[in-house]
Image 1 (cartoon, one colour):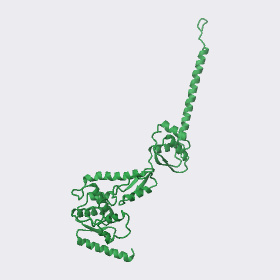
Image 2 (cartoon, one colour):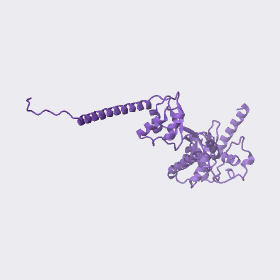
Image 3 (spheres, helix red, strand yellow):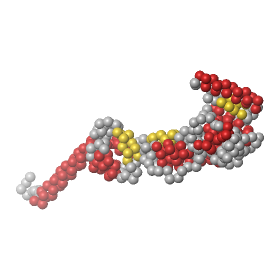
Image 4 (cartoon, helix red, strand yellow):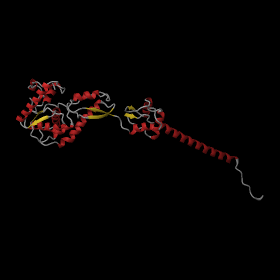
Length: 347
C-alpha cells in the first residue's frame, strides 16, 4: 500500500460499546432460553415422576371442586407431592376446567400426569344398587335408604308399582331421591316402548291396569319361563269374567306385601272387606301389589295364546297349568299329596 492511499478507520468507542451490548444480550438470551428449557424439563420430570401413594387408593372429588381445591385434596390425601406444581402443569395444558367430580381409583405410585389423565378421561367408580323384581315400593325405599354410598333423604315416596326393579350403577354421593327418580323414569321409558306394540283386545285399557296385572304375575312365579303362561291364565280369566283368585293379592291386603309367615286362613279367603282379595272382588285390585320387572310387563302386554285357566304349584318350584276345572282339581290333589309327604318327612 502506498503512502498516498487512504487508511481504514478503526472502530471507535461507540461501536465497541454497541458490539459489547449486542453480544451481552445474545448471551443473556441464550442463558435465559437454556434456563427456561431446563426449568421446563424439570417440571415435566416432576410431573411424570412416581407419586407418593404406597398402594392403590380411591379419591372422592366433591361436585363443584375447582383446580385449587382438587390439587390441595390430592396433596392432603398423599397422592401427589406438590399441589402448586400440579396446578401449574394442568393450567399450562389448559385442562383446569376439564377435571371431573366423582370417585376415582388411583394406582400405586401414580404420577401426576397419570392422575391428571384419570381425572379428565378415566371412569368413575360405580356402585350397584339392586332392587329385585316383586318388591314393594316401601321395600325398595328401605334398600335405597340403606345404601351408604348414597346421600340425602327421599322426599317423595314412590307410588306402589311405579318403579322398575333392576341393578342401577351409581356414583358415590348420588342422592337417594335421584335413584328413586331414575327407577321411576326407567319404568316410564319401558312402557313408552312397549305400550304402542301391545296385543289387541287386552282386557285392560290403561298402562296402570297393565302394571297391576304385571305385579300379580311377578308375585305368582319367580320362574322366568312361566311368566307368559301365568299372564295368559289371568288374561283368559279376565276375558271370561272369572275372578283372578290370586293368593298374593290377599297377602298384600293383609301385610302390604311383607311375608305373611303362615298359610292364608279360610276366614281371610272369605273376607270381602279386603279390597285386594281377588277371591271376592271382580277384575283387578285397586293398585299394584309390587313392582314388576321387565319380563312380567312384557308378558301382560303380549300374552301367549293359550286355553289355560288354572295353575297350582307342582312341587318343583313351578306350576302345573290346566284348561279345565277337573284337570285343575287333579293337579291340586297332587300338590296336596306333596305337601303331606313333606310334612311327614319334616321337609
